[in-house]
Image 1 (tube, rainbow, N blue to C red):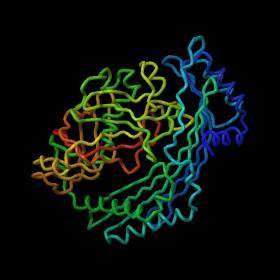
Image 2: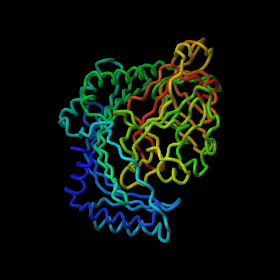
Image 3: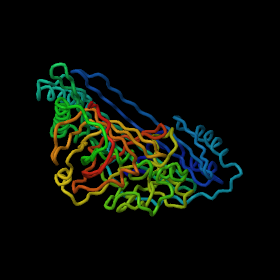
Image 4: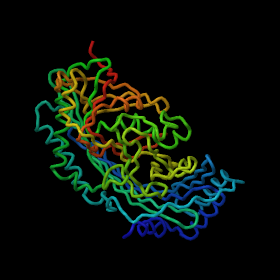
Length: 477
């Protein structure tokens, strides 16, 4: 069944909506507006958590609803409801019409459609019985405890969702997308004497549960979480001060995402609140630095066949060889900046208005072998995994905590360190990248990005990088 046909079944046949009458309501609501759409959503989601040898929680949720938006210049009217009925849509239409009353806008052209699909439309929630999912988590717990007697606690969680969206525009254009999403997380706490340390690992994507149920997948996740915990068990206090920092490949791209990616979203640049505002065509990074946002990668957590405005996702070059070449755009900000939408209009769900958001954001590989990069550093920090971080979009300043990091001594990896934080300025860091590895990797499929209270799944990635100087906040005296 096609995605449009699935949407017809979910939103019109099952919900009892009449498509022609809904279309008439949308046409009337958006008459005189510059842009807008009716966004219909149906979502099933579940989560299971296993902690301390037992099933701690299990949940299943079904939600549905709509959001109706009318755009007028820089203003947008938005109304939403969990009730899928013509009466509710009519009330929403009366609300959003107020934002463009007296405005003589001409409705923007609809996005060009696409027949591609980047992931299966199969609902993962029904693929494995509840008992199988619980057994998976119990097996993870038992396997972790059997690997090392120092394991004190194991936490494992499994989450999945199946989201169907249908977008109607004035004039009758419509698009649809069916989005599966699954994720497995494992956290292990180890202890030796009075010291306790933890490690964690997660994996997932727009795939089915069968990948996560494969012993090769979940055992690998357990082994990696345990490895990180044991590394931290032997860690020493982190140094402090300015020093060269080597970032590992893959998940450390979260620093790129936060410190640089948000500053390249269209709304911040239109409002000139980004450190990158007004710099298109100018050098903002060291030669060799090329940053991409790509929503078209098959089965990836951050990918979208179409975004939440109906625009097909695309591969957008943001920085090319150090030169700022583009921003990530939704429809409203693209129109106001006289640019083209890039398929980055995203929303958490029907109750949220769309805005420019990242999909899968990563830096391309360079030419250097990772060992060659490390060999150039006499004394510095090798940061392999990150936890939480904060960034100020306007100034570009960021703070990130390292969950796995090592001293670099005489060009070789030294002891693990605990409590290291990286402090810097995103645009400034880009200019201090002096060596780029040939080992670009994407994260294992665990990213969630927050912006203005909305969370959406994303991907990150990068090769090994040498940053010549970065402030490290540590715990060493």
